[in-house]
Structures are given as C-alpha cells and as structure tokens.
Image (cartoon, rainbow, N blue to C red):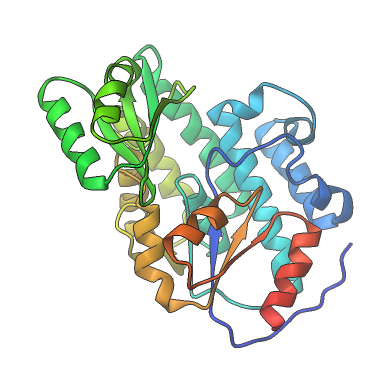
Length: 319
C-alpha cells in the first residue's frame, strides 16, 4: 500500500474526468498491482454488479466496448485514480467536471455519489441508453473543420426536412460530434464535406448519445438519481448548462437534461478556466488533456492515469 504524503499548497485546481472513448484494455492495471485501494475498489465493484472487473479491465474481451460495461469501467478507473491522489495530496478542487459519462465520475469526486452507487448508476444508464436506441438504427458522426454555427444550421435545416440529427458533443473549436439516425447521418456525409468539413466520419456505434432519441432513458434513470445522490456536495460543472451546481434537486434535472442535450465541454472549460491555475485529469489516457490544449492553452492540464503520472502531478503541484 502506498504511504500517505499529503501535500498542502495554495494552488487552485479543477478535477476533470473523461468519458466514453477513453477506455482501453489494461487501464488501471498499474494501480491494481501496486495499490490496496485499487484492489479493494475493484473487488467491491465486482461484487456490487456481479461483473468481474479484473477480466473486463485487464484481459482481452468484447464487453469493454459495450456501453453498459464501458461506463462503469471508465468511472471505476477514474475514481481509483482520484482516490489514490487524495490519499497523497489534500488539495481541494475549486470545481470538478467531466465529459459526458465523466460528469458522474466528477460527482463521485465531489461527494455527491458513493463510487459503488455511481458504478451501478452508470451501468443502468448504459442499459437504458441501449434500450432507447435498440432497433432504431441510431448512430453518431464525428466532424472536423467546421464552425459550430454552420453545423447547427445544417442540422436544423435537415431536421425540418425530416432527418433526425443533432449536435451531441462540443469538444473543441472545429471538432463536433453529431448524434441521430445512422442512415440520416450517412446520407449527409457529402453535405457536410461540401460545407467545409475536413472529415465527416460515421462512427461504429449503435447508441445516439445526448440527443432526443434518449428521451425514454430519462424517466428510467431518474429514480436511481433520486435514490443515490446526496443532498449537498462540492461544485460540479454541468455539461448541460456549463455552470456549477451543488444540490441534489439541481443534479437530477441537469443529469436528466444531459442525456438528451449536447455536452458543452469546450464551453465548460473556457467559461471556468480563469477560476483555476491547473486542470488535473483522472482516468485512462489523456483525451481531455489534448482537448484542453486547444481550448485554453494558458491553463496547464496534467493527468493521473498510473503511478508514474501521479508522481509527476504531485511534483507539478509542489512547484
């Protein structure tokens, strides 16, 4: 077990957490092999969901790409990274935020959810998202090189013509993900390219996140939000509003809206960046670190994805 070496300092930081797309086989293994905290959290998560998270995370399998498994796996690894960091450093964030699913990891860090409740919650969230989209031909598309206004205009015009297509993720300037009916997205690849897209790629997905196709998932999810969320917690930035919230009633409405509305990640970062000196990303990879470099170059982003990166972050905080 790692020894505690808690570090006081006066830096202002924000904790950030990645969403789907950040997963990979082997994520969290360094933590698991070297930290009793990680071993305990993985064991308890396996017991809670009756899912063997050691196999899911560390052995080749097809389940890690399925949203009902992807979501709890990513949240678990992010929560482990954050828990080990907190053991080593007592710095409190000015706020926390996550990208899509990552907002639930942020809620764990903020004290709004117990991590085991959150793992069950996002597992069910994945199942409800699948149920809402099953048989409907749902899909998503990545666009590169277009302005938000142009994309929004085309989507609006196409919906008026009967197409089902919506902006889903505002990742950074010139990078936007759409959601809707896959056939409709496929039919508009040339339209987006003619309008200036450098790339218009229909993704290999059967779920359409953050759009009106998930309306049925909202009512299914709400009872679990009611059951598991704490009444008050530290500030969390909403993907839906880009503003902080700290109470259960607001969380229920904002997390419900998040399912059917676009993730405003770049807006959340740019509108809150001046409150902090540093962003710390917790979880597998450096997806958000890469986005943040394009959104707000003046505020550094560091990441905690294994023990080596943890030590680097602790040194950065001391500096």
